[in-house]
Length: 231
Image 1: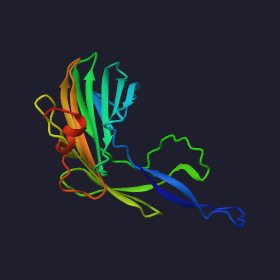
Image 2: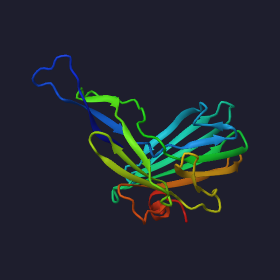
Image 3: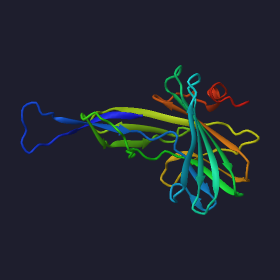
Image 4: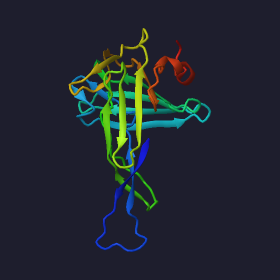
């Protein structure tokens, strides 16, 4: 997801036909981003080795399935399964589900779903010389406690903006509780902490609404249809 923006171009000497502005792409945060703590190791701070084992797209359902093998600096290994979709029938809806499966350790795992950044740097390949590959700048504002994390993201020059909000699915008997929380910077998100054993699988689902905040956004609303998880 991204916004178009522009920067003014300065020239030592400007000739007729030279553009006044340079096109820039502002990239929103990645809704697939997840922060995982394994005991005292933190994916946001420590270097977790990530191997993409498998990735495929179901052309019939639009579901993207990805499998990663992740190893911490202390050699704790777990598999991370990520399933995601962008709804075609409800174009403001995006869903993502994570499954965490430890392979060689037993210990505490904490999952944190918090998007407190914009202006992320990503490598983009483009042959279009008209588009500046530099990342533009945006402003992210957390909307005061809305009962679920909500953001207003705006560009500085093109004056584009969007509201995003997301909600966690309710925990089942086999999955841990996911708690809504506010961090020390007054940013809102979700987190869950549980004790994991090798081979055990725990799942976490989130549903995003992209656009105006809708009071009826509910993670359970579309989970059966897209994820096929029994309820």
